[in-house]
Amino acid sequence: MIVNPKATWWSVVFTLRGSTLPRIWPRVALAALVAVLVTFSERLFGLHPLPLTTTPFSLIGVALGIFLGFRNNASYDRFWEARKLWGALVNTSRSFTRQVQTLILAPEGADAAERAEVEALHRALVHRQIAYVHGLRLHLRRATDWRDLSDFIDAQELADLEGESNRPAALTHRTGALLTQAWRRGWVHPMHLPVLEGSLTALTDIQGGCERILATPVPFVYNVLMHRIVAGYCLFLPFGLVDTIGWVTPLAVAFIAFAFYGLDSIGEEIEEPFGTDWNDLPLSQLSRMIEVNLRQRAGDADIPPLKQPVNGVLT
Figure: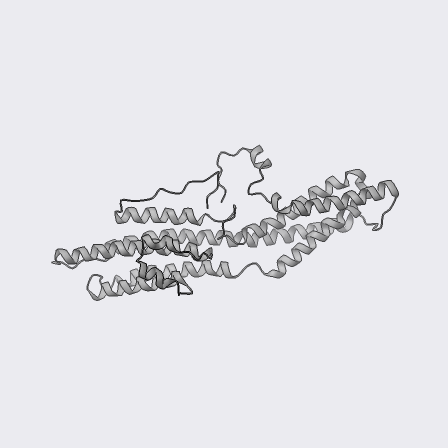
């Protein structure tokens, strides 16, 4: 995600990074080239194979603008829902950490060894939650290398995860088993166990929402129809403008093509919010923020710094 709070209006207008221009310029150039050929043919040789007027393009342009706006709204809804789900993940992770440290307690009169076991369980559960957050990020980005989780779970469990089709779900399942063991040992009050389980259920709901976005793209038929209409509109547009504006036709077509192709490209850019493109969600930064928050609560000493933008970009 691009973050540049000090950007000026002029710098935003002329920036290329994060804009649609690097993706659409060949299409815009093709439309402009067609417009140049049509303009020279009509002005120099009187050739006008398609005697169109601006009327059909005016009618289609209104409908096309509405259709593009609808598709971009649908794509942004996916982006914003993904951000809300990760916001819920931040809150649930903090709540679960608090519950672990305040609801899992050694019984009164417990000896030092048992109290140490409870403290070790606190630390293990907090680290497991950090592993889950990082694991969910890797899962959503379809990463196969999970070695970064070795700081939070043991090597055997990390190896076992390689055979799982849904690794984050396997992590929460093991966490639930540890909570049940703590309840059986009398470290969790029977009324508090549903509270802890509720947090794990909330994590599962968040993961399910993210997977729904990941596995259900904008219907392909929308993209096909949109691309075809925009391409046809921009390529045939010079035939309707050349009689009206003459030599200015290539410039006008290039500008209109830039607008329509750009709007079309925005929808594609943000409909998959979990990637690593410039306009995708900064999952690495969010994961690191959760890690720092939870490790501070656990009393860890070697806490990493928060991720900062690199050249104005958070990943």
